[in-house]
Image 1: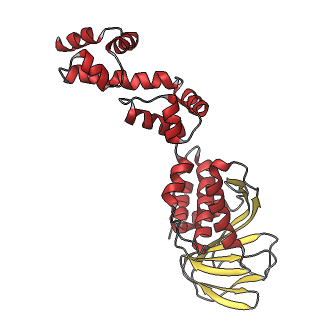
Image 2 (image 1 turned 90 degrees about the vertical axis):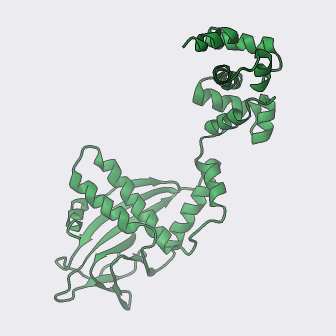
Image 3 (image 1 turned 120 degrees about the vertical axis):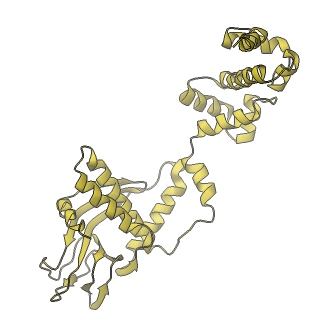
Length: 299
């Protein structure tokens, strides 16, 4: 609780924060205590209050109610409101006025995430005014924000921006009636994974089999050209080179750990014949498989 007054350092914070759906334009960030002189007013922007400690008494439109610790209050543009002065009451809260500058999604890669963010923000902003309990980490974001303000380290500003964004998205989630996605695992797998790494992982799992660019393309539902491009951009090698690297890597391990003949070993790592295996092995290792096995035996 004693760390909250440091939020006064954010008094002139006014930034446009990037989110998936566009930007959140912060108009003001205010730390409020009984020492603040309140008056009835409204804004052209949305305003969210978060109760840090104690209890605040609000009058919003014609309704009067209490805001308890860790509760959120959202107020729409044009709605008159006031935090009432109550003698001998000790409390603190913060208020953030902001606009959501929505930009329709263009990148289908993030389409599901954009839909989710849009939905939770719309659920919060659809109310004329409403209050809920923090259920999604608003308090945690503010606690970390206070610690970062106290640290005064170089480079903290970008972290402050991210924490304010985190707070507002957490607030929106708290107001949202949709708490979970039944297909969350599927969405995250599609949305946040590195596709080049996913392709490489598939090749690694199946490199000892008779696979080709075409078979991988069919298994992963990417075009052969797309697979080639992603592997080249991320690993700076071709599909064929990556496949050979996995096969030769496995062969080196087996040459050291087993007594398989070169003929049998070449088949086990995915080559159709000994000659092809020996050629690729020497090109990449500098030794024939037999020479490599002897060199390891001498260690």
